Length: 288
Image (cartoon, rainbow, N blue to C red; front, side, top):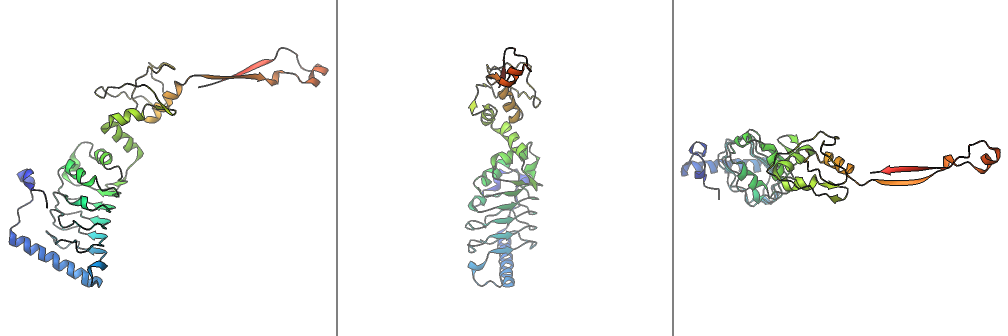
């Protein structure tokens, strides 16, 4: 059942639909579905893999649980307010709901196979409720939410990326690695601290108070208060690669010393006295 819209501000609530009007709307959707089945030549519900119900002026849709193998559903450019008609369509992989008047997407968590979901140009207001409904959809890769009121929230895109890490294409733009690093820094301070403390298979002691402001340093530059080999630097970095560079500079120095054979004359050179027979030199290589 759909959530009671009374929690929404009066101006944001979907208009109440009289019973007769609702019944008439359901009948319109029933006829639209039967017409599509006739066009496609389907005689059994088990044979239905797709339904094209776009631009039908639909405000309501009958329960579609009878189509258990339905994989593709087009409902864009209608006048829908909710999606309570999808409850047992577990095979649904692509759902097109853009350009409607949807206030609430409660019920989408019943669709574990959903791969593509288009919800742009709707009336979604509650960002947290929307994210909560989509969290359990582990196969969701493509999502559109632009042109919804919830997009006005600050850091909306990074918030979606953080809570839905499986999404690869958001609002027609590919999710980048830089965005994933940024959302970790903003929404998961503990994980950001661990990532930025990694140094060559180990973790250094870099105590940090998340209430203090972040210190951003330019890439490939050592901070002025940096000290070698004693881990006293507590700087937070905007890019984990900068942290790895600085940690590499803190590694203990390792010196390898060997004889420089170029300074040692051969037996023939000694015999012919072609080379100065001074003391042999040692060659030292220092690695950090």
